[in-house]
Every structure is written in C-alpha cells, then in structure tokens.
Length: 365
Ligand code: NAI
Ligand code: MG
Image (cartoon, rainbow, N blue to C red; front, side, top):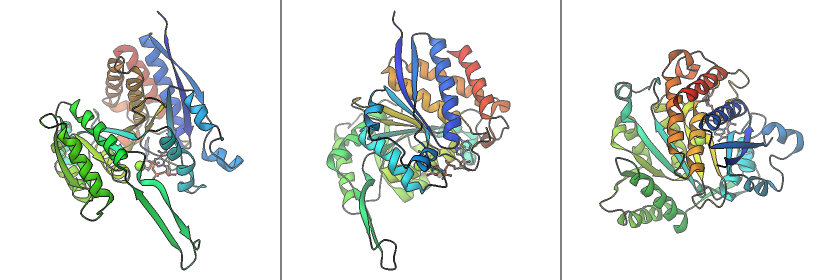
C-alpha cells in the first residue's frame, strides 16, 4: 500500500535550537524507516535572530501561507542576546501560535529513567510525578494588548492587558477535561488567582465549574491558587494529574515541573489546533541556551519527546504505539549512564545521544 508522507515545516531557530532540530530529524527519519508505513519530508525555514539581524525580519510576509502547506511544524528555539527577547517572541513564536489557532499548549512531565530529581520524595518514588499541564495558549496575559506612552521617559506609562474570553476559556477547559478523562487517574486541577484578580480570573473559575458539570462522576476536579500551587507541586506531587492554567501561570509552572523532573532539557510541548485546520507545532520547552550553544552538548531528549508527540498527533490515534516505542527507546538511552548529557549528570554529547536513540529505535520499534 501507499506510504503516508507527512510534510514537516522545520524551524531550527537560534542557538541549541539548531542542534536539537537536526537531532530530532535524524530520530524521526529512523522511526519512519524502521516502521515502513510512513515517511517525512521537511522544508527548513531560516527564520532566526541571525537572519533578523541581517535582513530586518524573522518571517516573510507570506509566512502563514507557507506554514499551512505542511502537516506539522517542528520548532527548535528562538532568542539571542543581540535581539531583545520581546522582539524575537512577538515576531515569530507568538504570531505562529495565535494565527495557526494553536490555542492549546500541552506539556507532559514525568521522570524519565536515569534522571536525578532534586526532591528526595521523587528520588525515592519517581512515579509520584506524572502530570500533563494544559496551558491556554492564545490569550490571557500574552494577548498582546497594551501600550506605552511617553516612551521611556521619567513619566513613562505602560499597560499590559490580560484578555479572558468565554469562548477562549471554555475551549481550553473542555480540552483539559477531555485530557484528564483519557488518563488513568481522571483528575483535573485548575490553577487560578481569582482572589486578587477579580475580573478575568473570576470568569476563568466560573467557566471551569460550568464545564465541570458535564464531567460529574467522570473526572474529579479541584482548584488551586497559583502561589499555593508551587508549594503543592514540590510537596505533594502525587496528588495531581492533569493541570489547567492560564498562559502566564502555565508558562511558569511548567518550568518548575521540568526542574522537579530533573532537567529543563527533557521537557516537550505541543502547540495544538484541535480543529486541525492549521498545522500544530511541536517544540522542547527550553530556549536557545546561548551559554552552551555551539558546544555540541545540548540534551536532545526534550526534542525527541516533542518529536514523539508530533508522531502521536499526526497519526490521529493510529501511531500511538509508534510514539510509545520511541519513548521507550529514549528511556533506554537515558537509563544508561554513558549516554546521558551533562545536565543529566553524564558526559555524552548531543550526537552520541542521538546515535544511541537511533540504535535503540532499530531494536524497539
Ligand atoms: P534556556 O532554556 O535557553 O536556558 C536555561 C538554562 O538551561 C541554561 O543554563 C541552559 O544551558 C540550560 N538548558 C536549556 N536547554 C538545555 C538542553 N537542551 N540541554 C542542556 N541544558 C539546557 O532559557 P534562557 O536562558 O532563559 O533563554 C535563552 C534564550 O532563549 C532567550 O533569548 C529566551 O527568550 C529564549 N527562549 C526561547 C524559547 C522558545 O523558543 N520557545 C523558550 C524559552 C526561552
Ligand atoms: Mg517558558
């Protein structure tokens, strides 16, 4: 029968984004070759801070049309010390998330084999941390509304407006309940700050409880203020499963989750358009890591895990086994001390880890 071909838009970006994207492509090709029923083609876009400094823009005017000609987007990282971070973020990653209608950002966290968790409870019982953070990815605190008056003079005024819409809240809550429903523990924790923020966050809470009624007896739910949530994540990780939070809150909590799980270098994220009208985007949660860029030591595991999530999404339920096998191959490699990168306490380089994962894929998949 005909091989299914998935068209991938690859945006390596800056710093270690380039190394880990290259590594992810090798692993994806190895998975496809081993499986034999599908393959990938790639269009690589040079949308980066380096390109911006040379030509004055990250993406050309027709960027959205170009991306829509693909089934998925694989993204490395963007940001470089020579360009203010709000420029790199607002000229690339945030417009993509918004215009491709990627209103969900899914961030799974668990402790992979061979990882050293910093908290003693998790060193003893790594299984206590097994979360999916569902981040609202289109509005909230990152809606982009606001302005500056009087530039940056003594009397400067700046506003940053958080936007919460009923439609935006309802769709993320529904996605979160569905995610929780598909997990063995069927438990959803909603994160808020409705004690201090009495408009947007109150609507957030209200819509959560409305949607919760549809899941009565199916998904257990509770509510946490974001500050108390940081404490619970450290002290009672086993008490949570699926977590739903706003754009800003989930951004912060997912970095904490990654640190609790041992390294920011292993955590993946999926930016999803659940309607599937636009390509979804897959990226590790870490940035361009200028401090280690160009040294060949970046941990590619977060990039591989993101690739596994991309395979899962593209397969619409038919490639779940393949994605699970890729995760098994990754964990076989992190489980071996000699194939761990420095951030995981080892001394292997990006290429060695990549070669080891490809070899494992040959055995496992
Ligand atoms: P970062 O994630 O790039 O680095 C934080 C620390 O973690 C650094 O010490 C780095 O060496 C380490 N680290 C990160 N990924 C690693 C990996 N795969 N293996 C080993 N160590 C790793 O965050 P930072 O330093 O705050 O930001 C650097 C740049 O990246 C900034 O310009 C920032 O705006 C951008 N950034 C971009 C993101 C994106 O493209 N989605 C996300 C986060 C930051
Ligand atoms: Mg972040």
